[in-house]
Image (cartoon, rainbow, N blue to C red; front, side):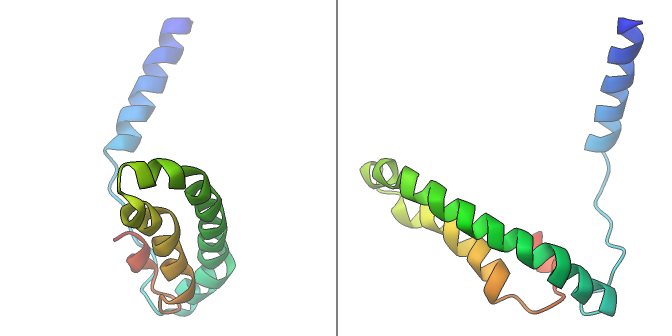
Amino acid sequence: MKTRSWILCCVLTLALCCATPAYAMEDGSAEAIAADVLVARPACFVATVVGSAIFVLALPFAALTKNVKKTADALVVSPAQATFTRELGALRDLTE
C-alpha cells in the first residue's frame, strides 16, 4: 500500500511540474479587474509588508556583501510596484 501511495505521489508531482500556465482571462477584462482588486492587490500588499520585515532582518548581511540594492529590489520594490503602480487588471505583469 505504501508503494502505491509513493507511485501516485510521484506521478502527480511529475504531472504538475510539466503543466504550462494558462490564462483564462484577458488583461483588462472585468474578470481580470475583479480578480486583481479582490485577490492580487491584497496578496501583493501582504508580500510588500512581509518583504519589508525580512529586508530589515537581512539588511546587515546584505550590507556586508554589498547587495543592499538587489535585496531591496527583490523584497520590497518589486512587490510594491506590483501593488501600487501596476495597471489595474494587468495580471500578466505579475509573471514577468
